[in-house]
Figure 1 (cartoon, rainbow, N blue to C red):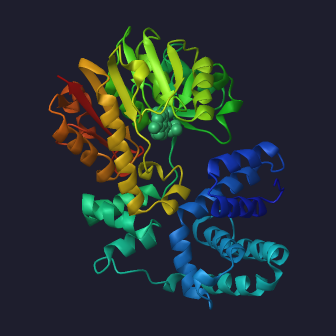
Figure 2 (cartoon, rainbow, N blue to C red):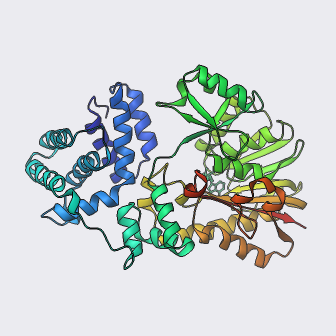
Figure 3 (cartoon, rainbow, N blue to C red):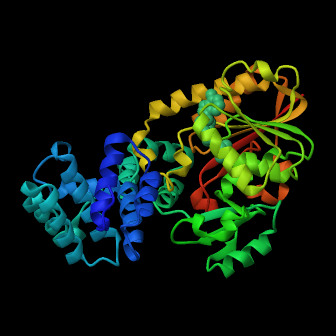
Length: 448
Ligand SMILES: C[S@@+](CC[C@H](N)C(=O)[O-])C[C@H]1O[C@@H](n2cnc3c(N)ncnc32)[C@H](O)[C@@H]1O
């Protein structure tokens, strides 16, 4: 696929995401590794792919306004070229409008020659009329307003308004459309956060401490972390602060036997090992063998030996665990990922409200299946990177209504210094607009 033209490479990647539901990060990595793009063009490719995915609904609104044909009837290649051109014109200061139009039309002449005149006309009209584009009314149709201005699916915008009210939902919608910071977790088995910050600075990486997790460092890096010696030496793991906190809230102790029921690629398993001083046993399970290998690779890079990976469907009866109950269980459940759409913006266009309900069924089944394997007095942490109530509070409520041998462990009492991260029910809820991290949920339950 590799191309020396960043716009053409972005087009190819967006086309594959659209046709095959491939993930943007994997395709971008592959393109950059191929090495055809150099210097600032590498950044432009990344910006175009993620930017178009993040702002798709707003770009489509503009296209609808200026296209003589219905958007739904436009050929896919034409629609993607229009999005790429408009993204540069409306969101990228560093690309002059004339260059954005000319480069897009040049590409159109190669890819879809018969539509190049049409693309040229839509882009030039949009530029001429850019100050006169109207959007849905904020008060009359708030969900359509948030969805169009900040580019999210209408059903998701409506759900956020239901949860937070319009004013706060608008702050969330704005934050969810912005690129996130890169955060890493210090490997405290090998170094301290302070030492790691000095090493990273010496490698030319700007960094600052995270806001809440004691292991977190926010870094400013262009290109891949794998080029850093500190990464290859296993001094850190790339992981958002919200995810670091969730694992921390399980509170594992050295010498314990802990199950990580949905472990790949091992972000939280390896963190649990750190918190336990690499003493004890962590059973890291996943149902996908190829992903489980990543847990082994990550543990090896970080120098961790207390993790045992097990290929297992943890939604089915776990015969192998029957005779030795566990001290702690982490269920980082497969979820809609609606809390991490800053990072994986393609995901928001693939999900529906019905998917959220389906996922919640699977989450309830996993929780039900695992609960029996916890020892009396042990703790279970249920976590997701979803903002949806159905996948979070509702799963816990349904479980507790059937299991009076479990109680909520109020995280406000266990971690009083982090009070602002917890709900009145004692659950962890992180939000990008409030805390500058991914949307995340965790509840800790204790077996009586
Ligand atoms: C949210 S990800 C886990 C992320 C991981 N805990 C981390 O911090 O790096 C969910 C994982 O659950 C796995 N999974 C989904 N259904 C499963 C099942 N029934 N049994 C075991 N693993 C499952 C998926 O393959 C996926 O790797």
